[in-house]
Image (cartoon, rainbow, N blue to C red; front, side, top):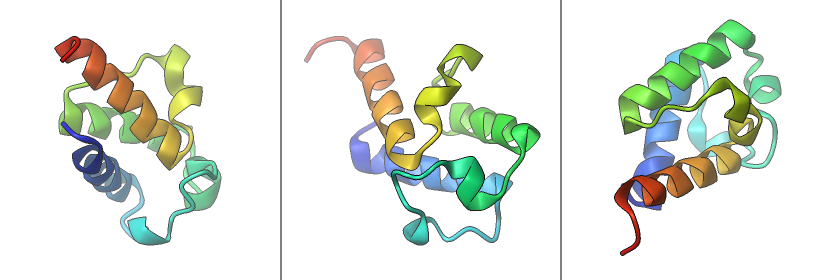
Amino acid sequence: MNENELKEAVSRALVTVAPEAEPESIDPDANLREQLDIDSLDFLTFVIALKKETAIDVPESDYAEIATFNGCVSYLTKATATATGPS
């Protein structure tokens, strides 16, 4: 997946936990839980949705890295690169 596809996947995953969210209005550098007023269970549901969208498992120890939209995309980009190996 390229970066744009990952951004779309993150947006789709966010909408699963916050259906009223408008991905284009999300501050990409602000904490997603605070912006979308989601609790820890919703965040876990978001992580599960991310895995369904991208096939990338995010361990609990890495949750801080996906706390923002940009952080999430960056994490997934690195994970995708690692999974596919050097080009």
